[in-house]
Length: 302
Image (cartoon, rainbow, N blue to C red):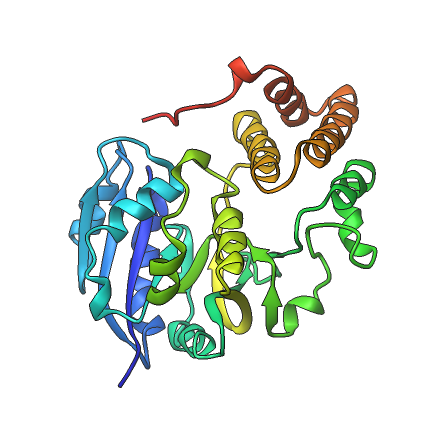
């Protein structure tokens, strides 16, 4: 039997990209049974809902009613699926385009012992690599990235972000990857539990991958499955950039003791502070959010 897969696309004002995403799914599903596509709409004010409703194939819309974030949107869509009739569920950004056959390639990765999550190679629209592999967060890596920035990823295993293109050519296990496109077995989803909606955006995929590992499920990176990802605003929008940093610290505190967490926090204040003094507005917003909890983003705009 072909693997039975459902896809949950989490949309928010995604009219410019959603149609392309949905049109890519039927050819991506060659070799699997695409049981259902759910567009979980986080209260979009554009034509996202209309585009989803007019899309061909097994597409259904779930209107969340407010901007619940990536995890919240995924969980709203997931709640409408009959998981006992599925082998796996994919969570997908609307700015992704899956290449033909990619779902079957990812589903085959889930057949490996203990693998509960399968992740594709991500490419930018111009065909260049979008680094997605990440290492386990540690105090040492936080300080390395505070000092060297993304260059830390080019020095052995010093950085959390893996920037080596050669590493992205090889299939294998990873601590976590960026969450734009992830296929999860229904067994993994059932045993690990829901995605944590308290993160709003960013680090929710990290938290789920690390928690899955706690339950004995590994994440497998499969570069033969290719997804084109346009990408978001986290590198240019000060509010979102601050949320990235705050959520990294929040996740580390949940998994480590107070001493390590305090040092980890200090590494981020140092790294973001130095860059804020150099004039980077995204880093200034991150420092303010770290040092003034009252200024942290607690609700996403609807």
